[in-house]
Length: 107
Image 1 (cartoon, rainbow, N blue to C red):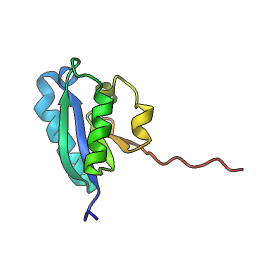
Image 2 (tube, one colour):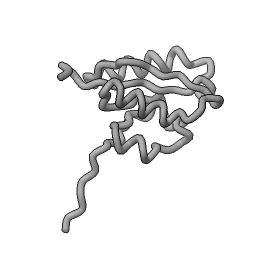
Image 3 (cartoon, rainbow, N blue to C red):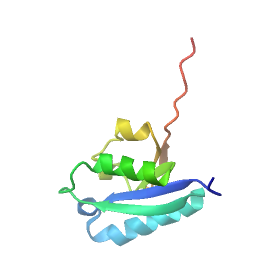
Image 4 (tube, rainbow, N blue to C red):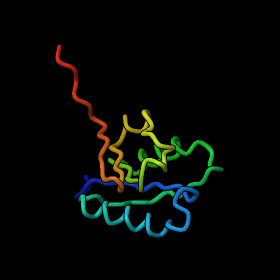
């Protein structure tokens, strides 16, 4: 068992543009502030085949609990449903957490 929860970073270089290093630093800072061990940051572009599947594969391999992204723009403006089922998604700006565990409906 890990001493702290694990996370991976994710960004698209075409979305970050000239701010890519800044976005990577912000991911690292937020992970540290929230108590995550940032294991790896994936940097993809529009040419990357099946990026969400690749993120899910890395989450599984590293047994990570969260994906930290600079903003929703890096996921095309929305949180991928199949990704939030297996990990929390945390955005740097605005800072928000999309939790994987939903509250079950009251019956």
